[in-house]
Length: 306
Image 1 (cartoon, rainbow, N blue to C red):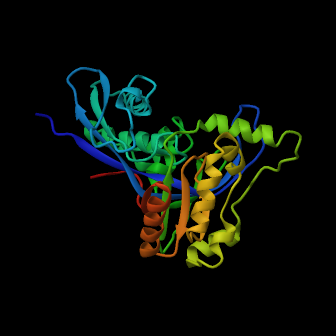
Image 2: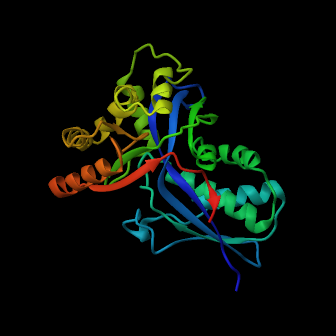
């Protein structure tokens, strides 16, 4: 029996996210600070004798409420990632791909991008195609702006549409509580709402991340850091899902150092002082409001074999 090759890739939170005006191609220039956190997607790749690429969902997928609603066709990012790698390298054999989803679907944490990154790493190993991490990153960028970061992990400044990455070396970890929603938000819809809210405003193109934020992260300055975290998509996400404001307020009331929407939402990230404080926050949100929470930390490594 063929043994699967398993790769693991992290979800992310955007601890800083500035968004410029839409470009002619519809994309938005951004200045982002990505942080890979300890909530992971796994992809197990098993060789096939034919050229078929198939995908299935592991029973351990805690992020999937109804497996019947999870798309497993050609549009799934893992299928697209495997097919792209096969076409790029001229590899002819197929693969069975089994996903274990733990990152919220349409939750603003890059779960689909993590799936794609893990697929590229797993298939590159399984097929012996020998691409470097940098080459996989260039391929991944064709699948989505967040895929290169899911491959690299850690922490990084992202410019352009988020795909121009500059790694940031952090010596200390930060601890977070994720407040998960029972629904998803469409990233394009959140960007469209942002543009509608800004209608007529003169919006500058962001060219860098606030240097004070970078210093606070590197120095692990939990006094300065909370006031520097920002996400331009927050107002748009709250407009589309007004209940998000209550979650943000609950997190702040419970004692989080700061509460912010991750990416396009609806996941809310709460900054904690340390692991114990994070567990306390999570317990309080569960007990008082029934909020579905995960305690995580970052930075963590990018896509890798396990």
